[in-house]
Length: 318
Ligand SMILES: Nc1ncnc2c1ncn2[C@@H]1O[C@H](COP(=O)(O)OP(=O)(O)OP(=O)(O)O)[C@@H](O)[C@H]1O
Image 1 (cartoon, protein in one colour):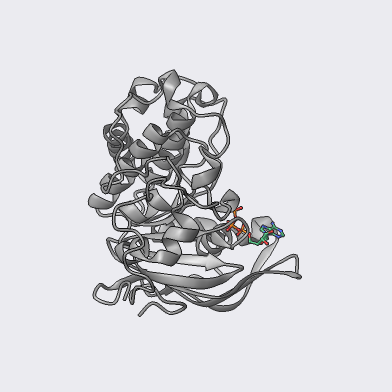
Image 2: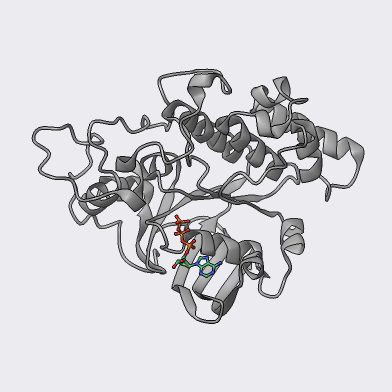
């Protein structure tokens, strides 16, 4: 069971999406997110994760995609046929992959752009202050042009900009992409804090260890279908997920709370990894079945102890 005991805020039912009239990207994906939950969506490159977020946020059209079947509801409201701006007004905000911030604008100006739909100067100032409280580093760099920020700071800014319209749910697409482990820990901690402040989160990630550590429930997509779903702890403990998505030979996964031991201030040079996935081994798309591990440590304590764990099952999670 994923969200049965809580009222469902987001309901996706048997969703099918086609790009350019020919590429079938989603083939009947069902997902539900309860109010106050963090739900992770995992899967390899091309599995359909970004497509799922685009469908929910009404941005598929910008990419030449179209929902061809299925249901999409947010807090009971039908999302089909609504434009992206209308969906933001409902309280659903999408932070797409790749930190699409305005490089030539300052941090403050980027945040202002994110709050344009918010009525009232005082409400906008409150939202901005909340972002600066969450990310003190952004406050320090408020007058810096976004292009000069480190990768971690840019990701904070992308999330902060999404928070400016005071969403009820954030759709985060790969916030850890290209960041060093200690920065990923900071992003994970921020997601937990945002959630603690009452915002539900759908977290698309290739960093399965981080995503499972901070989410309550998770869905695994494969070739446009849900192949596994269940409580995150059960998925993390299942042999199949460990074998396919948590195989990190010799590299520590984030701690059980998703936080790193290291606590560098964001923006320091050590923060930013080269702009590519931090490690092939922890990136689902590039993960290859490891050769015989020859005594290498298991990636997480307890992983693999529950082969075929009852909580991780295909399709509908209920
Ligand atoms: N704009 C597009 N036009 C045509 N096909 C697309 C488009 N965007 C995605 N696709 C295809 O849809 C499928 C799902 O892609 P999607 O980007 O949703 O996967 P993903 O799981 O998010 O992968 P990644 O981790 O690489 O972003 C893939 O086959 C992809 O090639």
